[in-house]
Figure 1 (tube, rainbow, N blue to C red):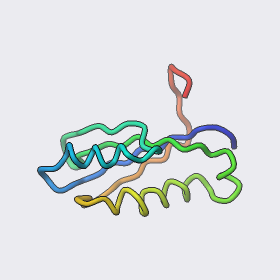
Figure 2 (figure 1 turned 90 degrees about the vertical axis):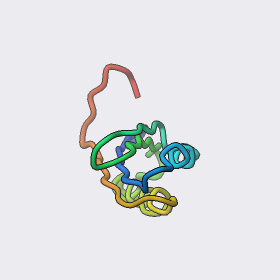
Figure 3 (figure 1 turned 180 degrees about the vertical axis):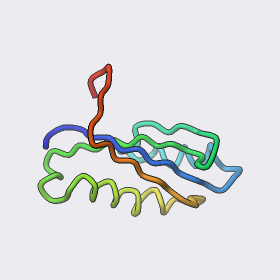
Length: 95
């Protein structure tokens, strides 16, 4: 597969440092957007990966899983994550 694919990660963080956390999160080039939310999770991160080339070595699920485990979950303050990988996306604008 060639092109870009997205994944979504809901992140629960320790209270009080939401803005600083989002600043650290946005330093990763794979993080396209970060949204502060209310409810069970505090942040929704939109990830985007270029899968051309990488897809030959790992599945997209493995690429996302490795990023979440090695990067997001290691950020200070992360309590929990929930990752969503779309099987198909429909959008009004080209990704």
